[in-house]
Every structure is written in structure tokens, then in C-alpha cells.
Image (cartoon, rainbow, N blue to C red):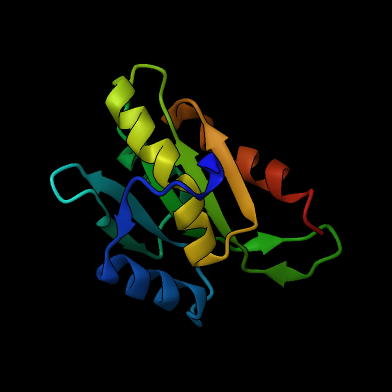
Length: 142
């Protein structure tokens, strides 16, 4: 029963941006940084990134507040193939307020379902988000 609980709705703007990200044709890294507006209880777009690096995204994550980060990544496989997986990163730093933790945790599943995310990863601090970390996580998905 608790699995179906949705704490926050997803704004229409975020839904449109997620669809655009999923079907983009560019061959570089792009991302959406999502936050929760506690007044409207909606998942909202904080920032959109085009042609960025993982290091740039890492620097954009706050140290003491949770965020959702959806990354369209350029992944080079060991056999030379290139794919463009969508990766969902849930950043929940240890110093977050309990209220923030609950809002993000309660909205996690609905955002994953809306975007049809299969590559979902959790980090406890922005420093964990590195190119090497992401490549290691993606090795599981051949």
C-alpha cells in the first residue's frame, strides 16, 4: 500500500522536459536537475543542462539538500559501441532535514515511473557523482 503513495505531483513542465530529454538526438551529455517546491508540493525543474560534463553536474548538486538528477549520458561500451542511457540519480546527502528526505523519498517512485527509468542510482553526497562511478554503475547494463 505504501508503494503507491505519492507525496508530490510532477509539474507539467518537468513532464515535457523529461520527454524531450528521452527523445533528444544530440550525442552529448545533457541533464535535468529536479527539486521539490514544498509550497506547491510539486517536483519542479531547477535547471536544464546541455552539452555538460559529469563534473559540472556534480558541482551543481547542493551539499545539504536532496535532488533528483536525470542524465542523458554518452556511454562507450568495451566493444566500441556507444549508447545513450538515461540515468536517474537520487542525491540524498546525510545532512538533509527529515522533512526534505520524506518529500523526496515519497516522490521517488512516481518520478521513476513517469520517466520509465530503469537505471536508478542513489548517492549520499555530491562528491560520489563522478564519471568513473557512473561508468562502473552502467557496466551492469550491457
